[in-house]
Amino acid sequence: MLPMVNQWDSDRYTPKLIEAVQETLQMVSLTLLIGGLLGLALGVIVFATRKGGIFANRPVNALVNVLINFIRPIPFIIFLAAIRPLTQAVMGTGLGTEAMIFPMTIVCTVATARIVEQNLVATDPGVIEAGIAMGASRLHVLMRVVVPEALGPLVLGYAFLFVGVVDMSAMAGIIGGGGLGAFAIQWGYQRYNDLVTWVAVGIIIVMVQVVQFIGNAIARKLLRR
Image 1 (spheres, one colour):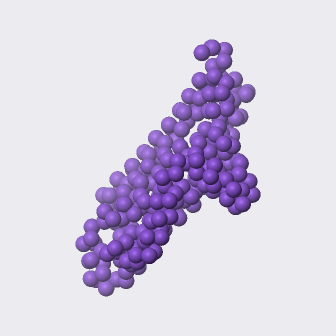
Image 2 (cartoon, one colour):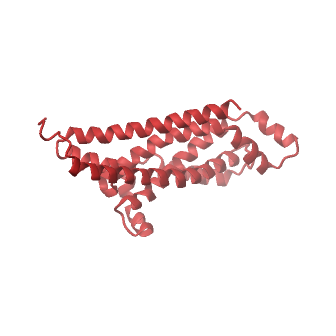
Image 3 (cartoon, rainbow, N blue to C red):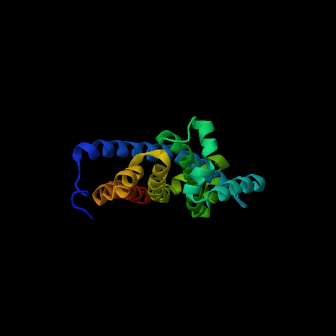
């Protein structure tokens, strides 16, 4: 490790670091927003259509489960390469921050769906029975009783998901997605500059800690209602 190499050249690295942070925030925020909403819808469908569910429908449940189980086991770095032709067709390019949002959103959607399903399954069946007994429609019970009942755990699930999305953004950076992952690899690892790498690591740790703290605070309030 050469001290001269590990010095932080502010004029050289600071603008690149700021750009990398902006790219990471863009990838992570848009992926969580789109994938989080799509995953919420998909998770609710899986929960509602399961055997004995509010809208039990075996074909629909099997179809959605196959879709989720098909994508989830694929390592993200391999998924990025495999889906690149589709990314190019949809986004017009397979490289760049905006292009990486497409495959990240797909993986985020199926991961969110499982988190949502697992939290909804844990809902007390008595709450559902009580809602139906009071004459509420099945859709009303699902959206106004079951989902709100699981909001606290769902918030914790989304906070956990944030870590996974940040991890995906770092891997996306390796193959042209930009962001802190690309910054750490190109300007840190490949140039033997440990300081640059650790600056990127430190920023990621701070981002995760802030989101986890906010998620924990929101979840506590929801669970104490």
